[in-house]
Image (cartoon, rainbow, N blue to C red; front, side):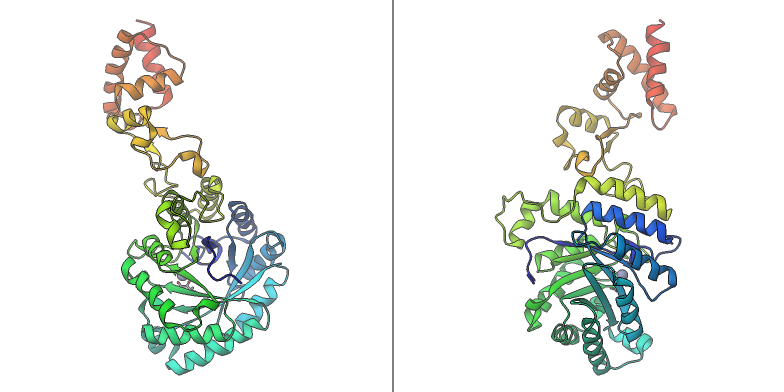
Amino acid sequence: MNTQPDRIIIFDTTLRDGEQCPGATLNVDEKLLIAKQLARLGVDIIEAGFAVASPGDFEAVNRIAQTVGTADGPTICSLARAVKKDIQTAAEALKPAAKPRIHTFIATSDIHLQYKLKKTRSEVLAITEEMVAYAKSFVDDVEFSPEDAGRSDPEFLYQVLERAIAAGATTVNIPDTVGYTTPAEFGGIIKGIKENVPNIDKAIISVHGHNDLGLAVANFLEAVKNGARQLECTINGIGERAGNAALEELVMALHVRRQYYNPYLGRPVDSEESLTNIDTQQIYKTSRLVSNLTGMLVQPNKAIVGANAFAHESGIHQDGVLKNKLTYEIMDAQLIGLNNNQIVLGKHSGRHAFGARLKELGFELAESELNKAFIKFKEVADKKKEISDWDLEAIVNDEIQQA
Ligand code: KIV
Ligand code: ZN
């Protein structure tokens, strides 16, 4: 296995960690619909659920494994605590998948060991070794996560990871479970792992992070610079508490700034090759599907997929964009599957944007008519937040053409 791929592996956990947030529960059919769309989006791995958690989760993992987990489809994964019953159940649910993965985890921070697990470090080391080897007896592809790695003692973390790799883990995932680390720190954790885990080159380093301080995406990008090659993320960033790292933000950051990230992946700076296998044109559609099925609304100013992400309201910005999009846009809306940028007309809009929209609506006005219409438009805009195309038609019809 190539543990240093020159593409970033996208591991989607919308259906496992993403669904694990208040109100986002999905039924099996809904999960299947999302899994099919994730496959179209081009994610490399779908974490389809936590098979032992409930009969519904088992069925979802099993049906996704059967339907979406074909030889040319994504790897299908189930989460399992480092407990035999969880691992057996995950293996059973994953049977129909052409490329099954078991993802097993145990906490490694002292706070979790003392209060949650009530286990010593040496007990955790022994369980890691035993349970990774047990998972390996069912599937070749085993991922291991030391939960709360972000707050774990680095020396202990290195020992746990070495044991997991020796027992057969092919991916070691580093979770910032409580979203506590900062980008420089998280990058440093990955660097420390690369330098201090003797057999780290036998596994892919993955990262998983929550957004409690709004830093998950920034942390991941720093991790990529230090050797992480798999990113665990969710659509729209949904997930436990403040959510997980958002897939669309990571993918577009790696795409828009590919020249910056290329050298970290061993490529020439000017390479135009994509850094992920994601079909970015499917991003918007996937975001809408997940939002509609989970009922988790996307905030309007959300990066990439928010309603305002490609909208320009101020007159200066609208004027610039109409002259050349590059003035205020760092990516084309079409890249994520939207038709166009949206010029929202409101009280800050200028004459140029106003005239351009009227043209799109089929009105060819003389200069004096345009001036008159623009004065009326400003009056209406002072009373309304946004001016619709109907408002514009009314302004032109009532104020100009009937004058
Ligand atoms: O946040 C976390 O630590 C997790 C693990 C199970 C990977 O979701
Ligand atoms: Zn998580």
